[in-house]
Image (cartoon, rainbow, N blue to C red; front, side, top):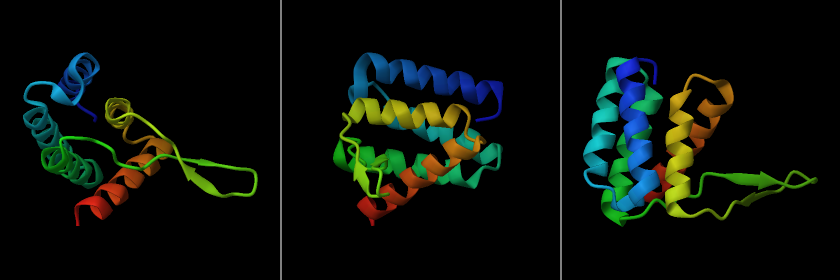
Length: 119
């Protein structure tokens, strides 16, 4: 997120999730509002992944998306076991610096995982 207003809203959402988790009031509405900021910033990746995120949470009342992996010495990837709230917090924190190359790759991983789960 690039604008100060978008980052302020993102910080508010992160704080809500830290306190209440997925049960945070109006979480889906907040994610929709963040998506509007991404639209204004013309960032199609963040726009899409935010939409997929609130759709997934709405349908599943969870954020058990498997988008993080560890790699062993031989190059094999293994999913990282992570609690829903921590997973969502990790994802939201990636959005703080969504233009960073590594963050962008991880955001793409979330997009792919969400699309596979939803469709």
